[in-house]
Picture (spheres, rainbow, N blue to C red):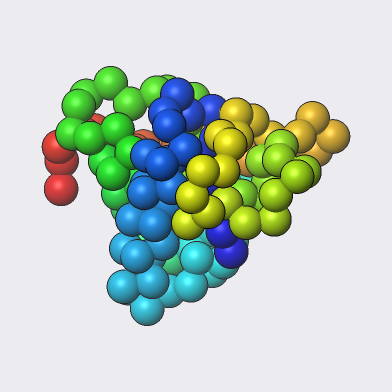
Length: 134
């Protein structure tokens, strides 16, 4: 599963670096990106979920934002790590690692936005760690 940072105010190169960091962190824990994403969606839907996989996704998102935005304290509130195929980018099948690919700025309007699901998870108490925290 390719990743992308939706609603990001960053260059494609920075977003791609962030996505690579997220994938590396998630898989370093022996969890697939797909399993981590499924766990976060299940958690947001108040269904049973694998807490280790959900934590890997949360930590992966933090790693993505650190790689993309640095250690500053003002990460964009609306930015969210999500599968690239959830983004409005019909002309490309691959995003992370594709040098020079144009940025993706939001999900398609014909289905619920991934950012809405993950924002709901944050509202339920699953907060993104502030920059600089471990």
